[in-house]
Image 1 (spheres, one colour):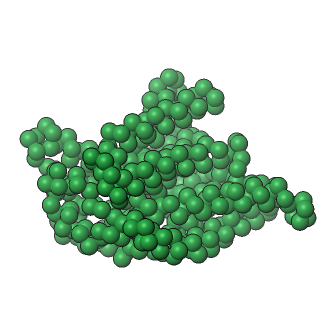
Image 2 (image 1 turned 90 degrees about the vertical axis):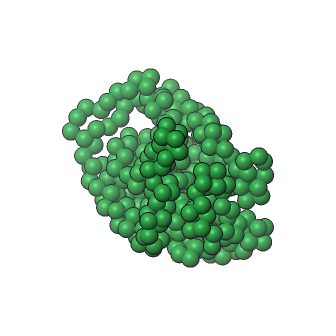
Image 3 (image 1 turned 90 degrees about the horizontal axis):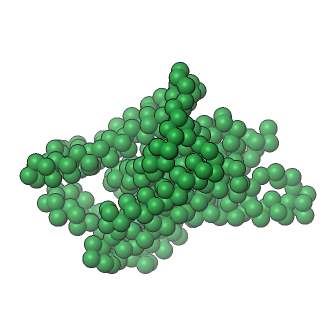
Length: 347
């Protein structure tokens, strides 16, 4: 019963705190001119359609994912303070959100990768540097470095080398676990970043996946990690209240990279990567569409497979309205999350 009260209390606080903080946060973004820019790579690849489709979104504040990280930070610090001073107020507090066995890795990932996204967003907004953002190469190098650090920790410190498969023995990757881990971190972080292109799209898909992993963590007796997932779920709900069309602000790389990488870490901690392969399918599709488009242009003399990549922009270009694309992706995302939950019970 105490575990349920613990989880529900953080759910309520997260939802209320995020909802209260967002309006002043949006005003802060406007005050400092932290608005969206249409990135120039669209012009480099002659994607004039992209500029036309999204010209109306220029100037809307970005870096909205920062509010989720801020709320998580406040609640983690608050939980530590509450646990420390609980005897003074005759309150029996058994847990804080800062737990060596459950949340250290997830929280470190959230804020470390969030820092990469913050730099990328700021460079783009202020149009600093030659490319006016972190280039894809630099961003991948940073993500690979972070992923390598995490891979060595999982392999040497935690002794983790196996991938769980339903109905079959776990697959032991041995040393190959390290490059596999790095690849998962980098691709998951980038797949959210790529999908974050329509109002409410990436936020809802992340919500479904974090909700799924909140229950998976609880089922694995990782109650504090489950609480962290639930906090992010309710922070995303409040975020989406302001992010659905017309969006008052956008998630930005700050939120997209950090939330994608953090969920990858949680999946590796619970050894449920196969679950994530299923529930994350829309993100994989979006990432694959970009890879296919780039390879096609490179090896087919500039010929494109899609009118615009990623895939959701292609659907816009062929005539589907933004709301239809987003809501249909939501429906598919919910189905995939349920299917992932079923698979998680079989591992």
